[in-house]
Length: 491
Image (cartoon, rainbow, N blue to C red; front, side, top):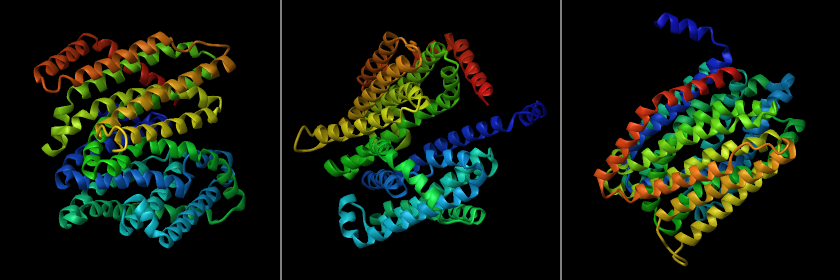
């Protein structure tokens, strides 16, 4: 049996093996995050946990500004476009990113009082952040190069090692630190591992390319990525602004409780990632072959799987929170329903946005991202600020849900426009089906929230879902097989 599996594995094309290991490493990262979360919620108070998560949210936003996300699309595109000088291209973009990080570090230290007040972080934490941002970007450049070349062994090994080392060292440092410095100790754990594991990525690409500065490639990268910054920044703001604003208008303790709920709920994005990574190339192929009408029925099945997975989490939210954290975090269960519902609409956005990406309608993507981020900030201010309604931190979960619903709806409208213009008015999805499934899902999720104080009723719903899975298990298995066949066909 083992020899047959080994033979089958070695006979796979390298692209398939690489895809398989990248998927495995993604799931392992999520798994390690799941395992470490209960440990940190017991080592840190809700306030300390909130302080750390607010730091993470700010770091996501500041990273976009400091590095311009040069290790994303422009780097991948350049590795292919400038294939004959790929090593020079890589080293020059490493040089550009280090220059940007150095310039922003100088600016920070000149105006550190202003920035510390703005971000509600101290000088030590901000210094750590800038180093983490640079080392992470150095790794991202190297990682992208490995993916393009299907060199997965070292990348997967390093990724898993870092994912284990960061929480392990963080636990040790938090336990050794004084109460007032525990959040900073957790950040220090990230810094130590990043420097040890990632800094060599910079030097190895510099050694290969031997070019720190290239006017040609620096200008190319800046011209390409600067217009995309609003999009990158808006996505980060949409993901992390909740915790920042809760910390500012409610308390760091509330931000900690909200962060735990958000972390638990977005674990369900594993299903999104697994399905979209498999279906993405297949959808592009259907668009290219001008057969978009084949997409709808496959996506409907995926929607049901995502919906059932998230409804199960909503049903078990009280138990999930008690597993992940001590009793002082128990109110986090009220945040899980709206965030889990949001995960469903994140998936729908991906299914619609593929059409804009294929036909290079990037301004649609940017407009939707900026609008979503601005709306999220406005709604959070309206419902969290004491000057207005002051509904408490749970309201931030519902503002997130509203924004993702509108985000998905906006991309659906854009997709319809693209289909009219480029695909002979092809009807990809039935609007009534999308609205019907979405409405049933949202209503079910909100109704399940009312059963949190009646465990018997909730467990009855869990039993019903298990029975349905048993009854329809063949259909589920056939759908999974279909996804696997899609992956193989594209690879």
